[in-house]
Length: 270
Image (cartoon, rainbow, N blue to C red; front, side, top):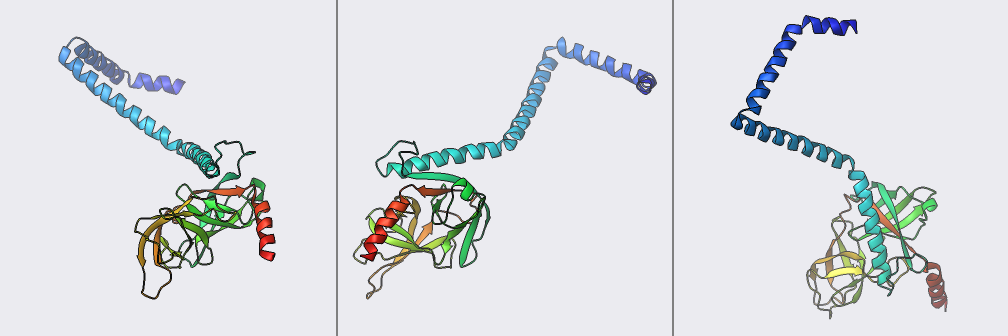
């Protein structure tokens, strides 16, 4: 305290000068219209700039919360869409066939011929091998293995993964498989030559297995060729998902998977 008093006493003359300068400035601004208007405009601009900076800073630190809210909303909408295809509109998981579980991608590859992803959720969160995986843009892949708190995904960019699909415009059953070349494109197989395929046709999941609901977006026809002796088209599709920037995914649980698989197994054995 004594040091503070000594400091103030030492600079008392300079302090008095600043005080008088402040009083003079206030008198000029308060009793002269033009300086008053200029001061108000400048102060408003300064306050607006400070408020904008404060708002931007606050929004930046809230990005994680906002992102989590958007992912949760996307999950709810996708769950509704998956079940709506079965004629159900209720969001009660006891009545719906599909449940979606959110997970964050913590590791991934997309430059190999056999690519995978690692999720921060596993069996403790209800994720098991064989479940389908989608993002906000489309099909991502299928769960390969799971531990208590982690899971690995066989990415759609994996040469051994086959996705049952249909061409939306013609409802033609087909199969999507990556050829190991371009991470932005895949092959659409088994489209018969008599089908009038077009560039831009949407390709979606068929719903012909217990992994994915129908009408989950996969990609769009980019190009196709048909030789004279070919039975099927050679088709390339642009994938909906950019696998170099996938952050969050939704793992799909089919509540009727066991029943469906068991019945189909009996049919195959017969």
